[in-house]
Image (cartoon, rainbow, N blue to C red; front, side, top):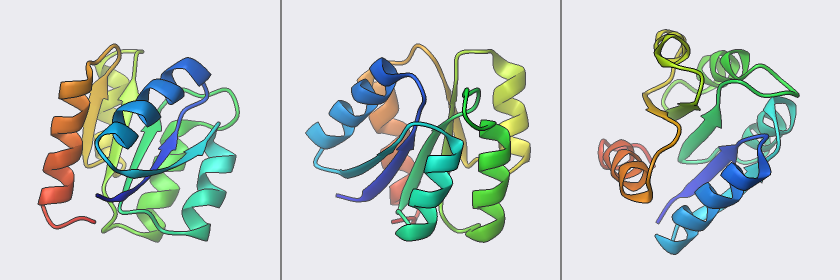
Length: 121
């Protein structure tokens, strides 16, 4: 069980991720965009961050860059439905892992488990 921050501007996707993680007994904090996500991140450092890359209220790439700069040991899982180039950029700027939308719960939980097992969280 770990504290996980989910940053996703699309409510349906955010709710799905939160349901998957809470069913796996993780404690989840939700944020609707980059600005809200950075504030939540700074309030209580989570064990893991899952963030969308393309968001209306704050560029996900910049959010990843800032969180990685402030706490490089906290793993970041970058999520995107916009293609591999966004995911590659996220990795270059600090994301520990990436996942492309749409994804299934088993795929998400496997990546989360791998990141947490590597000593993060």
